[in-house]
Image 1 (cartoon, rainbow, N blue to C red):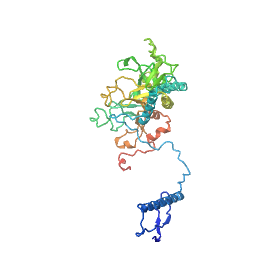
Image 2: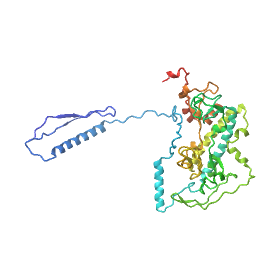
Image 3: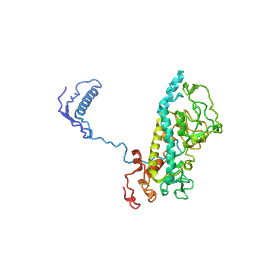
Length: 444
């Protein structure tokens, strides 16, 4: 027979973090008599029902006592952090990371393969189908003009502001003298205790030349290793502008009126292969001189001291315009970069020239590992140490954690008297006071 058991009190655990208050509930559990037979599993069913009642009461208590965290009365408007880490140096014995996640690349490839299996053409839009994007043609001309102005401004500032480069590695320094930071990785760095061997730098140390093959028809025949000398090498920015709609007489480009057709990765209709027109040897290349950094410091004279601040500001504005223009064009036009070296190719797919000599190039027979390029690969920023006092003592290794960095063009313009954008200041660490060498050990 059943007997009324004494009351059993059960309390829920309280949690001060989410605002749950204790709820006291009484459960009466019937006593099971040993004199009365029960079917198998009755006791476990009773325990399950009591457990469900406890869970329901717990959920009711949490929902009744939960108080959402109130929003702060103000919001921070800092669009840029106070300080950011210095740019990471990618290891040479490893492939560069993909700018587009590999999972997304595989998903797009699977969708293209499904359409190809069904015999359905790829839905291509300009410029993927070989046609120009009419809205981006003015941007291409603006980018080319900004690129000319940037080369001219850097060449003028190079005459007025000292630039040093290491003869053993790629380190560049913009100041009255080279720094004393021991981070040289050249072949003879061990003999110099990793000190740099400074020489006078050139404009190519500020604007790193990135060249690409010029193609009359980017969707035509791919460049092979045997005929690579039949194609001209021009700055990648200029080639990007040409394919985006800029017309240069010395570097013609095929302008299609009918789109190409593709099924999967196979081009089924490109309008035939057309070779570019042969230019006469007497062509005047004077229109292309301003598009390359080669010999810019020799043909551009030194400016007057009173003109340096104005030139520095114009150069800074041109640098921002070049970055903005490249970013806008690369959202539509395809640019490929090698995942192991610095080779860049402007076009829907890379070339077949076997010129890669970086990590595991023997396994690839010297071929490049093409992947989608980033803006920094087409227009490298070339970060240098920021010097607060160019005429002061040189930078030292003991205080390197207090120094910041900036792109070489930004540092050059800053020392020329230009106002730099806010997005460069966090990496330059302008708010950090550099201590004396004997005080650096006392800084936390």
